[in-house]
Structure formats: C-alpha cells, structure tokens
Image (cartoon, rainbow, N blue to C red):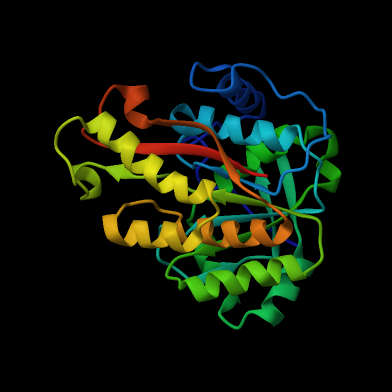
Length: 291
C-alpha cells in the first residue's frame, strides 16, 4: 500500500521520534494539560472525542485531555478521524484509504475495508487524495493516537475523512453508514473552536475579548454536550462563528448517539490567548468526550 508522508513535522510538532515523544509527554504534564500521564486501565467505554489541531505548543495540552480518555478506555477495532478541509482541495466529503499514514512514530494502518464499505453507502463520499495531500487537521491527531496506543500499535487502524461544504442531511447519512458498518468504532473529531481577531476576519466584540470568547465557545459546546447537532448548527449559523470543524462535529454527534452515547462531557477549554497572552487574535481549544 502507498504511504502518505507527514507534511507539518517541524511546524506543528517535532519530526524526531525522541523529541516528539517528550513533546507529547510535556503536553500531559503542562499547566494547561491534565497534569499527569494516562493510566492504561482500558476498562472505560467511550464513543469518541473532540480534539484541537493547532501546533502542539498551543493546543497540545488540550489534545492531551482528550487522548487521556482514549488511553484509559477500551481500544476499538477502528478509529474514524473526521477533520475539516482547510485547503478547499478535493471533494466535500473525502476519504483516503489507499495509503497508510506515516508519522515520526512509524506507520499507522488505514482501514480500507471500512472505507470501501462507506463508499458504497454514501454517494456524496469520495475516495480522494487531493483533500488530504496538504491538510494538517487529521495528521496532527495521529502522533497522539500512537502515543496512547503504544502497546498495541500493530492493531491500530483508522479511517481519515475530510469534510468541507456539507449539509446536515449528508452528515447524518455518513453517521448512519459509519454505525451500520457494525465495527467497534471510536470517533475522533479534529476541530478548533472560535478563531477571533482581524487575522481571522471575525471580531463580533472588541472589549472583554477573553471573557467573550470563552462565553461564545461555551454556548457552542453546550449544544455538543447535549448531543444537539441541529441546535449546534443553528447557533453557528446565527453567530457566524469561525469553528472550523462544524461538519465533523455534527457527524460525530449523530454517530455517537447511534452508538449509544448519552452526552458529551467537557474535559478542558482554553484559548491560544491564554498561552501567548494575546487576545487580539486568539483561537479556542476544547477537549470533549462522548460517553
């Protein structure tokens, strides 16, 4: 099988095995992280997580909160990783199952059988390399996924799905197809929350920026916690928020509900402004778990 090489090593995370391992370890121990390393209990049942996708020095500690849940839960047969398409290349709903993915930790196998199954069920879904060639949102999840599954790497499989333009109807159809595959699946959503500031062309408020950004994202996350995908979508449309993974989040809510989730729980939230002390241009990072 072909191999998709990493494209953001040295930018978002280290390209060196040992340095990357230390970098991820530090995200767990960071003041913004959970404060301790995962305990490999493997006795919890979760259905999925939401995890941000900025450079690890910014959003890594928030990712650590989400991946601690994966580390301490039962390992599924396959992880479906849903990410936004920032580049605009490729089709609106794009898998890429004809290549395994490489990180500094090694190769992660793609579940091509699941991909082929979904392709038959969803006409709008394409197997399209273009959406994944230059996109970072799914790639930056893989080193964390490998780190928390380091004892079971030979069994680790995932399916990448990139989403750009979408309808709620198609998101629900994809969620149904994922669940109807009858595989033991966990959903991973790669998404940041609100991007605020002139750099992002989004300034709905110009005072109390930190407080207002927290309030805006917490309102959005309340819909996610209640597994209300339509309420979440309507809120995003009303507020014109710049949450990049709206489509992936809707798919995850619907899929996790069908898998048996009763709620999503907020693990941790902070912003890049809390890291840099610059709230003029800041991005919200939220870690959530579906359970």
